[in-house]
Image (tube, rainbow over all chains, first blue to last red; front, side):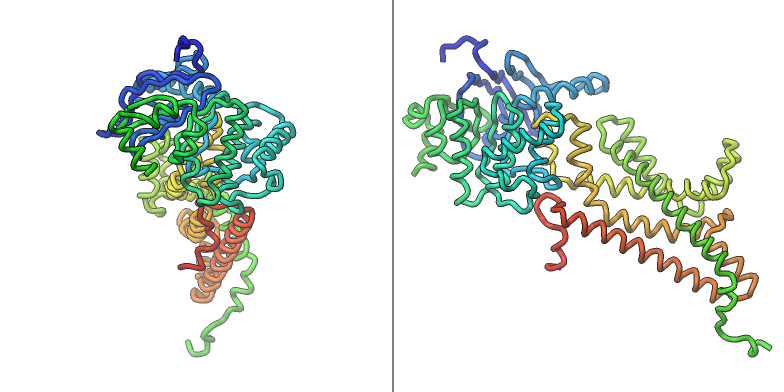
Length: 260
Length: 239
């Protein structure tokens, strides 16, 4: 990529994270341009999900920097200055509101109808009036094909439908980038393609996306770039073509084990 | 002489029914007021125990240990006589009784609430944070409503305990059911009849509370209010 740094929507700069003795991320660097679709692949435990969760500080990185839309974000926690911690925590929601995220286990809110699931953020984060929020939420749910399920509680939905609610919930806020964290891994096989189609729709609409996935065929189809991670490090970044023909031993071993 | 006295005679109970029902009303009032107060305090203490501040966590821990550890008998004497001696606060009997029960039950409920909050799947908070909700909003709209469903049954138990614990308030002279029963029993020399009647009244109150809580629980299950993935109402089919 020959863009200069100001062209990037998202820059991950030497991000590291460990859980106790376990170093999950080791000095990870990655830049994402606006409109780019990046798929992260790699063996389980390689740090893919953790990297994704560091971007919106759901799992704050131990060190390093996230530059999003030219604004720099770093983890902060003071042992003594409670007020500073409080002020820092007050700021984070502004970053997260611009970053949509969809999870492996859906995490829809079980005590709210699908419509309420989607309109909550519009009301509380985007400060819309209740009626307006419901209207926008209904549109968002219609786009994922759930217009007949607005008043239904999640326990009456299939896994695929729950995941659509989660996608609508994220998209309704009109985020600048979407993060997908193994969003088809908990689905029954016959429901996977429907969710992947939703992501393809976003690709066509030019959404910037970072997708952690085990669906290799899909990843190689939609990605502009593929990131191969192993043991907490980015081993290789390249176009799908470059990664397919990689000579890097670990990437090669991983791909041959998966693609047969 | 004794043989001329009937074995059981509830006539005296019937003649004292107004006093007994008054006592019953006061007992229920004390228990209800105390449990409402205890829920508010218990929730605050639970949130303190889960906060980032070491000071708040420490305070909440000591609070919980203290009021769970002290027998009700001692606690009621502390609040009624102790406060008057130490701080010159002379509480009337009924408020002193309510505060005592509220302190004791808030200690237990804070632990119930804490475990209820922790039982809400962490993914719920993460998803709520990911759409940009603040910590406070996450608690208010996502975590607490789901925790409420989880702590409903144990809170009902606590209410039942509180009703029966009002009996202890008789030692500071709160004119509740047990004290009334005691006085009337002494007056008529009919302890068995009066205490049994009191027992039946407590039992009815406990039944009522149990019914009320299972009604609320059913109502919540009907609107699809489940904890994470499993539907709580169906558990009976398997165990």
